[in-house]
Image 1 (spheres, rainbow, N blue to C red):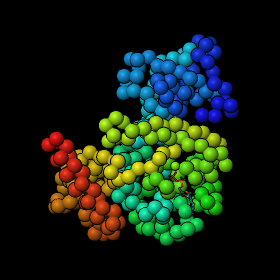
Image 2: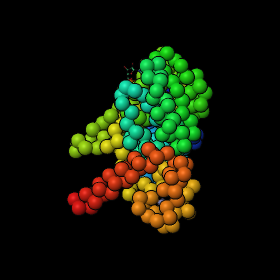
Image 3: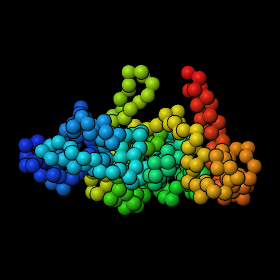
Length: 301
Ligand SMILES: Nc1nc2c(ncn2[C@@H]2O[C@H](COP(=O)(O)OP(=O)(O)O)[C@@H](O)[C@H]2O)c(=O)[nH]1
Ligand SMILES: [Mg+2]
Ligand SMILES: [Zn+2]
C-alpha cells in the first residue's frame, strides 16, 4: 500500500459520519477501506465477521468511527483469490510456459459459475505468435475478449488498458506467464506485488491474501498463479459450467444430463455440428471424469 500517496485516516478522524467504501486489503483483522476521501483502516464487530458469510476484499462496506457496520450485497465472489465484486477474470496465457488448457477450462468454468465475465490475454506475442491462434481456436466461443499483448514491447497494452478501465480485474493463470509484468505495464514502471501466498499448516491448501491496487481507474488483483490441480468444481455443477453450453440447458433430454453418454444430448449434437469446439468438449469429458473420481474418493475418506 502506497501510504505516502494517500492519507491514511486514524480511527478518531472519522468524526462519527457513516462512510461508504470498498475493502482493498484485509490484514491481521484490520480492513483497509478505500473511500472518496482516501483510505481508512477499520475494524469489524465479531458478529459481522461471522454473519453474512464474512467480509472480503472487494466488499463495499459502511463504517462509522473506524468500525464496519454493514456489508453491501455482493454481486459475486471468487474463492481463489478470495475477492468479492469482481468485474473481470483476466486469464493470462503465454508460451513459455507451455499453455495448460485444462487449467484455462477450469478457470473459465469457475468464473462462469460465479457470474464473473472472463477475458484472456495472450502475452509474450513478441516471442511466440502462434499461441494466440491456438487460444482463439479453443476459446473464442467461451470468452468474448481475447487480447494479444507483450509486456516486454508494450504491444496491445493500451487496448487492454482501455478494456480494463473502471473494472476490478483479477489476473489469473499459470505462474511465469507475465501477469505481474502486464500489471506493471498497465501501471507504468512502478513495480509492486499485490498477492502473497500463504500455506496453511496442513500444507495442502494454499490460501491467498488479496490486495487491490488501483491506478488510473483500474483496480487490479495480481495472483501468484495456479495449476489445474488447485481448482475444484462440484460434480453436479460442472456440466453447466461452460459458457458455450449454457443456452442448451433446457434442450438435453435429461435435466441432469452430464453430456457424456446420455441420449438426445444437445451438447453432443452441438459438438457434432461444430458449434462447440471438439477440443473443448474432449477436455470437458476428461475433466468431468477426473472430478467424478475425486468425489468418489472424497466420499470414501
Ligand atoms: N519475451 C517476453 N517475456 C516476458 C513478457 N512478459 C513477461 N516476460 C517474462 O516472463 C517472466 C515471468 O514474468 P512475470 O511477470 O513474473 O510472470 P507471473 O508469474 O505471471 O507474474 C519474466 O522473466 C518476464 O521478464 C513478454 O511479453 N515477452
Ligand atoms: Mg507474478
Ligand atoms: Zn447433455
